[in-house]
Amino acid sequence: MPRTNTPCTATAASCYGSTMVAVKSAWHCAWSPSDDNHFANAYDGFWRILGGSQMLGRAWHIALPFYVKPLADIPSKHRKRAALRREQWRVIGESARTVLSRHVTALQARARIPANETAGVP
Image (cartoon, rainbow, N blue to C red; front, side):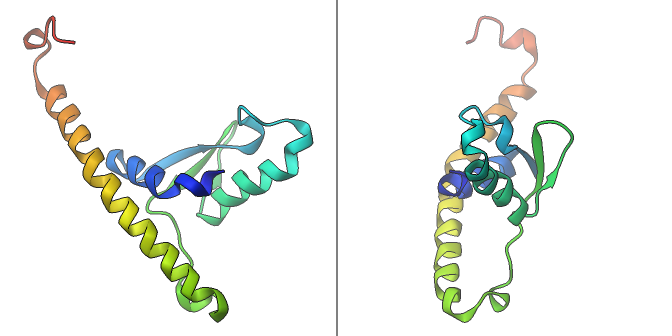
């Protein structure tokens, strides 16, 4: 579910702006009525934890960077695991940002070239 690719998703979104939009559980392509509770927890609950707010229609609005609870507010028995997870997210995020920034920079540079100079260029 969303937790597996969260660092990359946040990094990709942050390359383009300061917010992202995420799908509500009931609008997910694999959602079925029998899976409602599972999807509501895995998606809607997750976006809510990250500070998301429901938009009208099919989506959540989420500010970047994601909200994370201060480590001091996390029970001591979970603090070490939370700190490790955040460090892993940071490393993944930096790596993704390095790779994605090359593509974003290339797209931005290409967007500044006048249209008549790119005629016939795929």
